[in-house]
Amino acid sequence: MNPIHEFVSRFNASISLDKKLLVKEKKRYFLLNEELKKVIRREFYYAGVYLGKVKNNKFFPSFELLNMIARKEANKVFVDKKSAWLFICGRDIFRQGLVKVHGSKKKSSYTLVLNQHGECLGFGRILDDLSEEGKGVAIRNISDVGDFLRREARKHCD
Amino acid sequence: MMSGREFFVNRYEALGWKFKDAQPRQAIRINSTNGKEKETVERLQTLGVVLEKIPFLNHAYWIIKSDFSVGATAEYLLGLYSIQEAAAQIPATLFTDLKDKTILDACAAPGGKTVQLADLSSNTGVIIALDVEKRRLTALANHLERCHVKNTIVYKLDAREASKLEMRFDRILLDIPCSGNFATDKDWFRQRTIKDIETNAALQREILEEAMKVLKEDGEIVYSTCSLEPEENELNIDWAINNLNLRVEKIDCYGEKGLVKVFGKKLDKSIECCRRIWPGETQGFFVCKLKNGGSQ
Image (tube, rainbow over all chains, first blue to last red; front, side):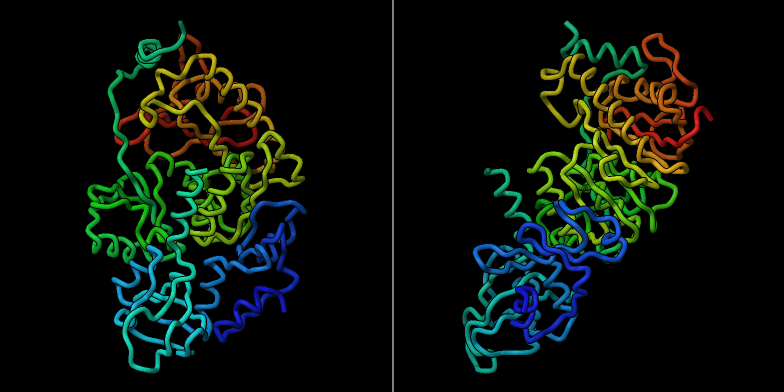
């Protein structure tokens, strides 16, 4: 199983990617379309849909891959407005911020985090079984779209 | 000395513009491929952002008031809009049609116009985006990912080597490296000399020459700079008409006619079809559309 499918399966989901259109360039994975496939040269910097990269044997998904998973049946939680904002600021999700839970509620499961508009903001890991009563932090933030800003900040610090 | 505020201000006056300080307004462009314009605008208004439609552009708004950075909202991070200066939004809109076309964005980073091209082409066809600097390519890639662009290939390649791609293009955007203008750089007058401008103008001619090699017979080039200096604008286009067999197409967009007389030198009359924007609500800008085939 390639790292992309392995990653997607953590959300109890599966996606089909045309192998002919999947390309790897320096540990980064991209999904092309037929048009791009026809003209692409060997060494490129970015192409089509960026899916993620492998670093230190660990797969780091792109937000486009998370969106692709979110369009499927998968573990996902919908959160309220305040929690959505805190999440993209890098914070965890509290129980009271959960509006709806789809798929696994089990501790340690991976889940996507979606806002009230159904847009995927990132993903995290369930800290406590969500089918049981409880309070406090429910989802540990692993990655969120606020990363686009943090990348910019890192770039300026370079 | 051929530099300094007075030198350049005198030049602008000789070109017919009375110098005044400018404060370009912040602007956004809605990425209509990623969401409905009305909904994105409503979401921003709900957050307390006051917007005003930019009269000379589609999908574009001035930011009248915002208590926070519009570059730090969920809507921005989700690619529903881009922050893009108003004049800088003009070039991509001048192409006849972008759907299913093979497009070259020859000097692409940081990618605002690449994303706009992808939006205008509804992610169809192919965009080849070039830039040379690693750091700028990273910014370009982040921009493409954030805005869900799917039809673009980015190469680390100098625009002057575009023919190495062995491709021909229907549309070429030359938003070309230039000397910039005082409206977006407070140190501009202190840092720029006429020599810089001549150096940039020469580089721009090299890029134009290369673009001609990869343009399809019926293709279109849009050439733009954010420079006010005629060497980088009208004089370069006059050179392209005379040396590259290009012709200037009529365009309908914001701005004044291109100058056909520069410091006493008469240029090809078709250059008045170019558009020159002196700084004001927008930054300074120059844009024109070129096609194969000599004077119109």
